[in-house]
Length: 285
View 1 (cartoon, one colour):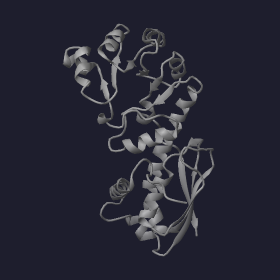
View 2 (cartoon, one colour; view 1 turned 90 degrees about the vertical axis):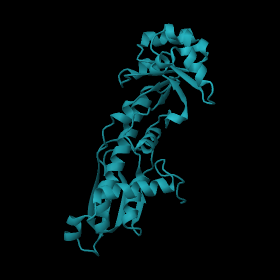
View 3 (tube, helix red, strand yellow; view 1 turned 120 degrees about the horizontal axis):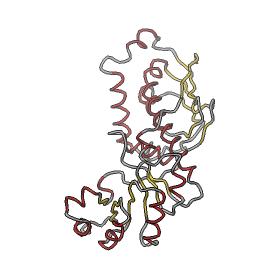
View 4 (cartoon, helix red, strand yellow; view 1 turned 60 degrees about the horizontal axis):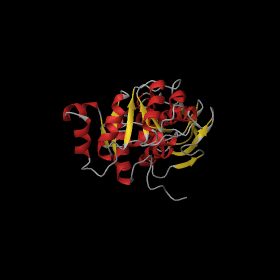
């Protein structure tokens, strides 16, 4: 089976740098002193990584990369794929290799797998809530610094569509831009120098026609109630796509999606997802 061009959204060089940096953070300059003192250099171990809760898997190949970095000859069998659901007790991968290397890589691999699977699992809950509405779930830039690429990868595995990865991915004129420019017309006018679609944030219904007249090509309705969103959809009348955002929760997202908006963005899926309960168990090889 050919290796993917990217792993958890990371290219080959990005992956190598990420794995090296994470292992260096955990191993320090002295290495895993406990393992090196207590585990024989030639000991081989078998292990299984299994989930202890129902999850959506994300980050398997990233986890593999940590083990391979310390033991290039390790044998690994993947039993699940990223984006796949796994039930409590399911084995995600089997490993056999150098005991010292496996123990030393364990925490970095599990941290990554638990974090990304946690994001994918929560994202899937949100995506399932709006299934059949025709509304698309988006993530946001509310990510842990340095982890955006892999966190947004996990969101995709859970069923979300990525919004802007970086600030250079699109134009989003927010209230601060409008205030500092002296009005929405001037802000949009200046933004037309870009080749990007121009999205304008509105938080009041009366701002909608002003934004559209200025040339907005997409609206972000921020912190609007479901009733306001329904009215916003009527006002826009299909002229531009509408995204709803701000304080969206699992118990409110369905009602928001059913207002007729095209997109709903949720910061919680990357910002507040709990880590998945995934463990590793050893036995002599």
